[in-house]
Length: 361
Image 1: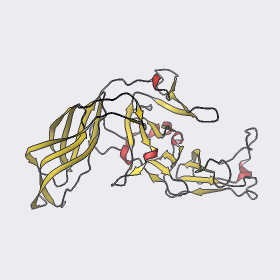
Image 2: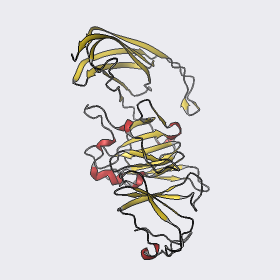
Image 3: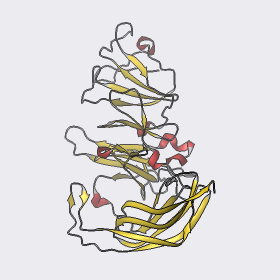
Image 4: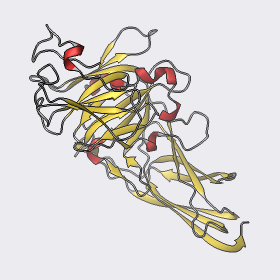
């Protein structure tokens, strides 16, 4: 059931019988959904999270009984609901939330159709420890939390087998775009080291955008953290293993075998070693190839320019010559790099392949 209080007061609430509003679904939560900075009239809508779908509630006259007012509940396209109400956040591009199907959605303003935007934080590899939001435990879905802060939609989730939110994924909302495969991004993560059960953003009159987060680990204690102040936090210095895996590319005719003799990578010339593995849909073809990076970078200073770290680090091209070629029909390349200091950036990945006249080989 849905009911409401008088304007600017919670002293009295309208009776359910007078309101007469009941969606055909159990409701888990709600969020303001408005393209303009208004809180009344048809431009101001409330997104309702149901078990079997999402709904928009809006009106210009909320007088009761319902025969007097003009309020209405409008079901959205699709039957995917949301049982993670803490993930419902207003952003300048629309309202975002985590669906019951463990997919992140955005409801654009003036649209009745939620758009799935979380494919890039779902895992496409079977490597142990490499998992995405598809492995959030069913029992922890109601505890997943999110916030829109500093231009990012920040999602805090539990990993497989865990009972606390230990991993965060950040979406750059200002740069939200769809790639050539139809997937939305850019997403950043997984980010670890904080167990955040909930967020609170102070963005009202007189506030300065303070962001607070609640500790999710009971063994640590009942702490509240100032997440907006970088002076309170530091990197642990632990090396982060970075993975980039391509889809299974047919290269040319998917019915023909190819001989791949050489691979070229364009990437930022930071320190360390990059590992490269090759696989077809049936399994690994070749593993253990590496390229070394020189760390040829001169940092000007520690300033931020246009919200990006400014340095003179230069990209470089590295080539792997395969003395014994790999012979895929569909090729996927997995690039791995571990670093505790540097930012890994891969700009391009090319292969030299010779098509063989051997159908279904």
